[in-house]
Amino acid sequence: GDIAFYVEGSKQSILKAERIVLNAMQRMSAIATKTHSYVEILKGTNTKILDTRKTTPGWRYLDKYAVRCGGGHNHRMNLSDGILIKDNHLAALGGGPVAIRKSILLSRQYFPGTWDIEIEVDNLEMFECALQSSPTIILLDNMSNEDMKAAVQRKNAVAPDVLLEASGGITIANVREVALTGVDRISIGAITHSAPALDLALDYNFS
Image (cartoon, rainbow, N blue to C red; front, side, top):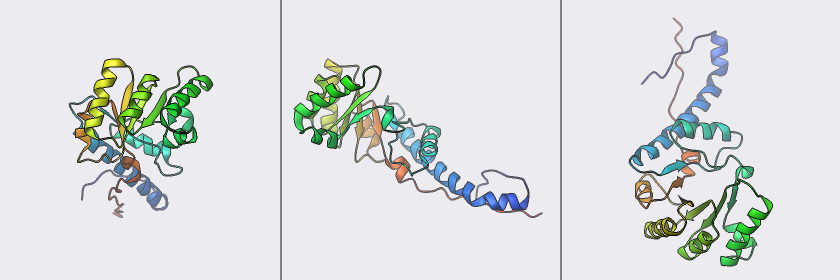
């Protein structure tokens, strides 16, 4: 029942614009609100909430803008904004430690300069191998809190400049526990792909 705002104009103009404006506001408000709920839970930690590329086709800039409005941070806008080496890339290179070293080496060779190089790992053995290759960021995918704590301790001891990002299976219920492992970032696709639309309606006053 809350009144969010008032608009003025001709009847025809308002009624023509009503649905598209409400659609946009319902989605953007949903994303900002969901993001803010995660950000609030992490107060007192140094961990940032990031979005992903799991956005609605054609709406990415708006989705990511809404994330920022909610206090979150944007990950890559598209594939050209940074290098993220994921499990399928490693599999294409044969998998295992050799693929980790090769992928980071090739990234540096073909994309020199200030490009961020992020690599995804899902266990401590792969993490150790990635750490020795000094990427910019290591993505800890679906790892237990205990393993993430161990990864943070190891990283702080030998490569403090490397950032650690947690992802996979993270919800409102467990996000603070993940942050308390000491990771620098948590990326959550659900803040854009599963945010329930805010209930907004336009009530016309003909008086």
